[in-house]
Length: 363
Image (cartoon, rainbow, N blue to C red; front, top):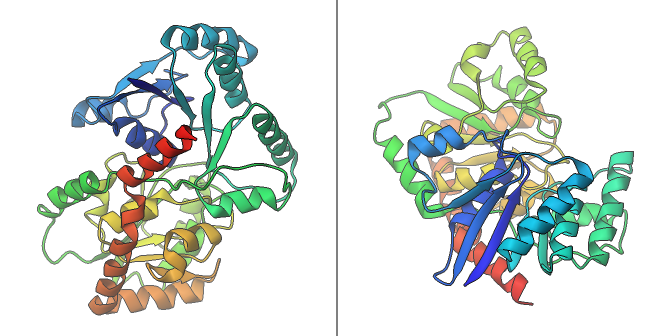
């Protein structure tokens, strides 16, 4: 029996947490997966999982957070007792190093880190991150980028960093689509066209451009922004200045994304060059929605260079207006991009991605 540990430093509401749940819940008959939460005080999913009975077969182990180097002896004891064969770490910072050292000292050799964020420029934070990557290379930790955009962003500054092959993020396509369909059945007929964007309200995203475009078409449709973050107050201020109903547009973070997307007719993903992947794009494909996104490397990669969705240059409000008007007014256009995205979706299903992880550890 192969034992796999999937490690999170707190279970927040976000794409990386969803990825950890998805991969750890997918198992073959000859393996056992454990989701390890290093900070049980952060567990935004608990009530939702209990209510929905999701991931009921998943074994979750949560601990009180240990600080700094104090984490190492604790993890040595934990890894020595449980003897995992493979360990996937879903965050990439100094805490990841403590986890790696604890695992290595206890005899665990198959270690991988999901690299989920790209870098732009040599800030102090990014220099430290590059140095950390070099240390992981020395310790023979597999660095697994979820997109070529992320991998290339590091190699642009340090070509000596050794990465494993790209393994994209994923969802359980069948399960997600079933959840969407359940909610579509109860949707009211003749609802107005609804545009939805699901993303954190932070510096990496660009909801502001979408808001400014929406002011020119808001009589034709509704806009809903799902998510929360440090830019929420700023964005709500922009919305108010533009005369928009911010209470209807900003609905905060939601866990039941299939239910949210069942209310949508169009999925928008206005983001920046700092975007690393955009798991929300995969979810939108599974929900059979036409997608309009910013033309940055990560979105280009997921949307097959624009074949599976409309790509708009960063910050171009005028082109967002044109694209939204075109998709809103043409059911033929919507159907065209839905068909294209469904074909593109297959490579992001959990069964395919899980096999890539298994092959990674077999090498």
